[in-house]
Image (cartoon, rainbow, N blue to C red; front, side, top):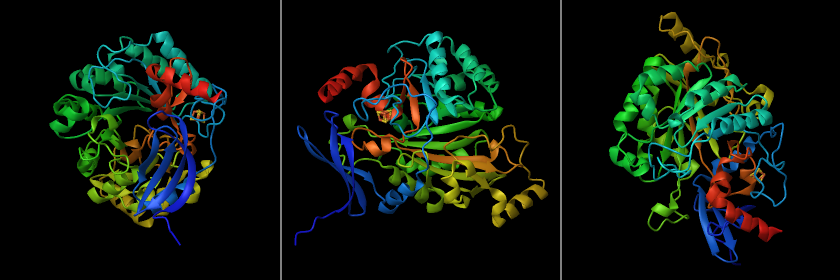
Length: 464
Ligand code: SF4
């Protein structure tokens, strides 16, 4: 009897990477990898690598928890996902993190920029427009968990401080500034003023590599000194910072461990977020069957390149398990303790019990007592560990502060190749657009930016 060379696992809807029409997709296992098999009537068959770890891929499905929704939806469900964003009532997760793009402009011209920003592209949003966008988030969420002021490069907005003041006046739990760090590096008074927004304020700082050649490739400039100066300034103020690393296969994926080790030694750094990127247009002969950098590959590389995390420490995030992996550690003096392994998976899936209690682990508790009794205690915390992000578990450890926490996140954004309608409905990183709609980050870049809207209308007209 003829037998297929793969094991059929699931069926979903995806997109044709050429025309962005919805197409049927099978999920199959073959040679230890997970692939998506698709067929477009016009553009033929495609095979896309979506994971290189079958067990993790299957296990991730166990991390779903009941969906939390926003208080308001901003569109109707008319054309079917993903042509109705958003958020339409069919969406299955509220905005855990909402991005506010306050300007199209940037003081860099990164070849990797998803928004196409540059010093001359587009315009700054007016203060009134930005206020309306922030008000939309508050209307949807009441008390938004994380709002990220972003761009372009938000620090070049002429009314940057007014924007920050307005955002801080709203009931936002955690405010973030997404920046390339140039202003922070060059202007210490600017960084000191940023510190006035703490607590519950964090810098989300681009940091892709230690190598000039890699930075040239990803950012179009040598930013090694800028990055170092920015982190020096942030360290002086102990201003909470997350490093954001855009990972490109074969370019900087060998630096993952080095970046984590460096980050652990910096006083201001609370974690590293890795974002694997696919730049199909810029790689000669890009083959989606072999060349994609998957979330499971990044997870494996973290385990290979560091001694801190094992498989039990890098778990799916229940808000959006297809797209997010988390790993927690505690920084105590010069020592680092992995923490995620102590999470009870059942608690993780229960919104009301989402807490790690360190006293539950004797080894960890013993270590803490030793550290405190030898005078090696941590500084008085300025921010409480409990108030972090909704996607991630709370940590109940009264002696510790946010300074003691270190978290590694892998954030894989869906694109036209790996698009899975099942997973996109759980997207929890959203962008508020200038029409005051809330759009999942991934579909924004596929359909909802100004230069994509004509295509979206054509696809919608086909459906009617
Ligand atoms: S991605 Fe979400 S908001 Fe957009 S169409 Fe699908 S369900 Fe609706």
